[in-house]
Length: 80
Length: 222
Image (cartoon, rainbow over all chains, first blue to last red; front, side):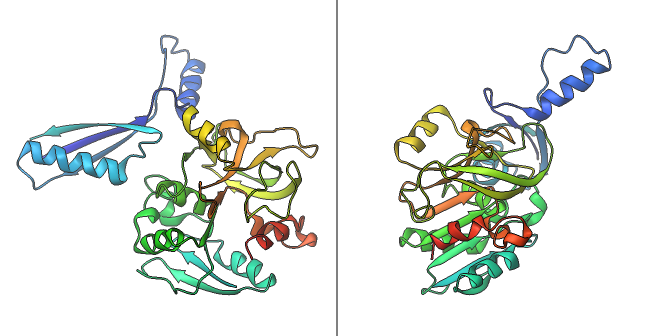
């Protein structure tokens, strides 16, 4: 099983990198962009075959290390 | 006075820190990140600046999970002192020994320059030699120094006198180089034995190198 984890700054936490990218897109005349958030994606292969257990484990990984929940949110997607 | 200075792969301020504390008369030792215990007679553990583990994942994140940090936590829980400078401050927030987090600087630049700081609270060992609102000049050198804490956390910091330093100009007016909430440059824990700051007092030990204001700060911990 593969776990795809998307980590981004929480709403309400200023995303300076997102703002800079937005500004650069503006200067390239992509004028329909309303908001840009820059995050981080972590992809991992798991030997675990039980989806519930895999989700539990990856959630724990996010809480313990992969995300800093003071400033970041995470989303986990499991792909068989 | 015995001071242990933690060294991770990528730490680069450990010998400056050692120089600074030896200048003040301390006996110092370098502590390796794989150690699971530290000497019981250490008075102070300093987590020095640098780029532990190349700042991979987040600054300080991987270092915060290394074996020595359990020993650092136990040292702090015994009521003894811990100081985190720059990357050390990031490590302390990642271990939750200090509240908040350090984000990328607001304008995304790595900032390396002398900066003025105003003492917010001297009701702690670290800044006890200063008066509140004293201004000191200490170098900063960081990419991820943008201190963040939510509104409730910020209120708690002020309620408990945990805000140590604000960035300011030479006259003491608030001047924020990196986007930190309330221009905060350093904080301590509620118990006031764990201290963290982004500026580098160990680089302000010699007038000939621009400032010796760091002496008075580090002396507070002696």
